[in-house]
Length: 309
Image (cartoon, rainbow, N blue to C red; front, side, top):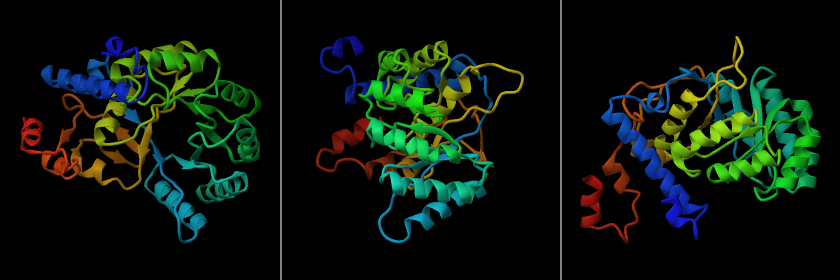
């Protein structure tokens, strides 16, 4: 599929569609062999994952600082050992909110920041210098995904590890990031970058460059479960006698599409996630719930029949 579409779709929506098919095939394969996808990928090397809570978004109305602090404390009370917040409102505002959240959660909980490529290199380095003292575990997508030089220069001039890659596709995109020494942490989105098959290749490539891999994870429990099985199979990098538990992103924001359409077997207790042992991904789609979210203009009886079959 990739070779047939190379002339017009080396990245973007079609690669995301191919990724979805790839993930579905791994799920089918696991169910045929009655094995979880993590085993089919090569075995469970990490039985427990310590996900970080993604949230702390900007909202309109009310006191944003109070809302962010309250949300961060909620994640801490739920046992999460790390949380990621958004930045990108401007240097002064960002520093104020980062400082408030660090003070609220204390020094025993990791804090990451993510600007979703809101800044130029000049702005990103200014922000990084001002928040270094708050023990930031990584600065995610600080500059445009096209600005490889900005990524490299930022990484060279701040103590904060740099993360990125959710806008890259296939091993070729990550090869550019790694060759240009842009990142400390590679973040492939399994459901966009080429599926589980390509994510495995990206992980091997990243480890050859001695980089960590923490997948960007968004969407339904299909995407989340795919990331769980992927992380379960990751090699420790580097390997040592006592390793930290691996991590992955866990979206904690309200998402009816995620929670209504897919039923999963993932249990999170005190910030830790046990890798599920059911065949395939361990996810089922509620077709009746899915119909609520379909495009009503194109959804007809024939489409409904195909979905159910």
